[in-house]
Length: 112
Ligand SMILES: [Zn+2]
Image (cartoon, rainbow, N blue to C red; front, side):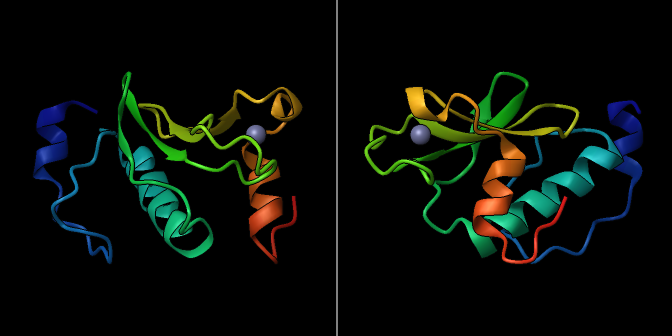
């Protein structure tokens, strides 16, 4: 979808801050963006605000959700321009931790 098409879409109902500009441009990515905003509000209040990163955005955990000694902001949630969500922590013990692991950790009802 071109940017011009995106602008023609009606405004979406959202409970998040209306001043926050979406960084993704496809409808699917927009849906995932809303999901992630809501998810972070509900399950990751300790995570910082999203900031632009490469062609998407990222939000940093000052303290890693998996290993509290990773407290230098090594852990972050990433979302690329296609809306794809990932989690990454630079801490050695977290190198196998992925986005689904974070969901399992935080969402009581998460089941993949
Ligand atoms: Zn970590």
